Image 1 (cartoon, rainbow, N blue to C red):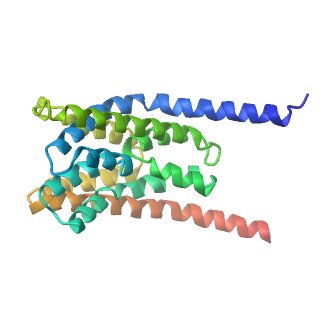
Image 2 (cartoon, one colour; image 1 turned 90 degrees about the vertical axis):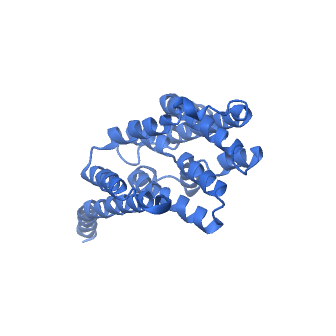
Image 3 (cartoon, rainbow, N blue to C red; image 1 turned 135 degrees about the vertical axis):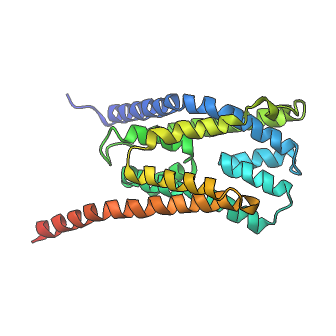
Length: 258
C-alpha cells in the first residue's frame, strides 16, 4: 500500500527533525568547550569601552568568537574602523577553506538553505558537519543536520556571552583562572582530526611555522600574515587537487553528448 501525501509529508518532517536533533547532539562536546570562551568574551566586554548590549549584539550579529575577541581588543585600543574591519576579515579568511570543503555536500540545496547554513558556519560547526558529510556521498544529505549543529552552537554562544556579561564585572579575576586556554584547546581539538589531507596539513604547517617566525612583528601583524598565507596555501592546493577531477567530469560529459 502506497503512502498518502500526508503520510509522506509526516515521514519527511520526522526525518528532518531526527537529523536536526542528531546535529545538535553531536555538537554538545564543542558547546562545552566554547562555554568558557563565551564567558571570557562577555567578561572582556565589561572591561572595554563597549556597553553590555553592544557585546550581546556582537554575538548575535557576528557569531565568530576569535573575530569578536580581536575586535574588542582593537576597539579598546581605539583602533579605527578600517583596522578593525581588515583585521577580522583576515582572521576569518579560514572560512573560505571551510566553504570550499563543504561546497560539494551542499551544492544541491536551494539557495536559501545555503545562505542560512553559511550564517551558522563556525570552526566547531564545520568540524561536526564535515565529519558527518564524510560518511556520505555528496548530494545525499539534506540541510537539517548542519542546521541543527549551527543553531545549537549559536544559542550556546548567546547564552554564555550573556553569562559573561552579567557576571564579568562581579568576577574581574575570571580570566586569571586560566579559562582563556579553552580557546586554544578547542581549536586544537578541531584542527587535529582534520589533518587527513595534504592541503590541510600544508595549510596548518605554513600558518603555524610563519606565525612563530613572525611573532615579533608589531600589532600582531605576523599572526595575521601567517593566517593569510595558510589560507592561500590551502586554497591553491585545493584547486590543484580538484582540477583533474573537473577535467575528468568534463571529458565524460562530452563523451555522453557524442
